[in-house]
Image (cartoon, rainbow, N blue to C red; front, side, top):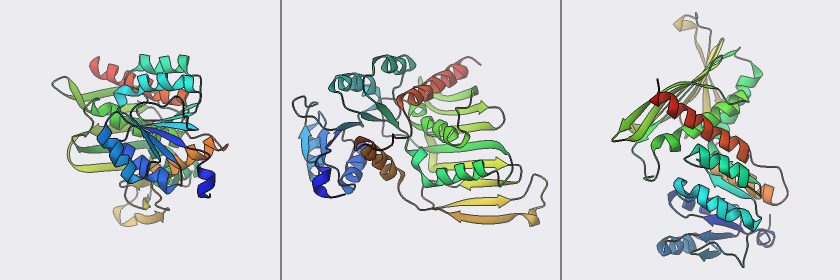
Length: 310
């Protein structure tokens, strides 16, 4: 794509915090013209240094980009989206869509433009390869999906860690299964009224076990698929391979065969942003439409209720 053509499709980025800066850098690497909106003048100065074409303290009305990416704090998403709907441009909003199921349902009722949710693990090449392995049935029937998403504390102070972490695991399960697994049970780790972790059970056959926490000193991002004839593992978000352990539940230890299956390690945020730019220019839609984003929020809401009412 030429630079001249990119100027025909300016993209508005609302929020230039830690993750917003990553989005800005990748948009620029994709040759997009980026307009940044942030109420903090210091963040706008940084956005200009990174390469933003224009900066605004408030959403511009007289000038209009061809699409919006929302990377403001999660607690502001509902308000920001409502303010963008009348402007008539498609929206790509960072997860979580909202931190409230009633707010998420309200967005369905009020949306007048296409809205998509940024669940970037659906774009991870390792998750895509796991999905292909599951669908091929080369390792037999899928019995269990188990994911572990843990680290030490969080830079996000406006929302608890369950809202920021478990949306990834729910959408990974959706990507692999082709449907959202039903919430069955959950327990939460709570400190002074704030949920810092959750272990959740969803689905039936296959079952899904999801553990998220910000009380682990080491960072963990493992995804395991247990099949009748083997196990496939993505160890973390940084590796470029899937470990496949061939063998059934009765295989002897010495009979286990390890296969390393590589994938192209393109950063998922890059692919995710490319999908929105392609959509704005007339291509296919990004993976998660508003309706599916709302379903993720409903599932989290139900898991939280299950945890509080065992």
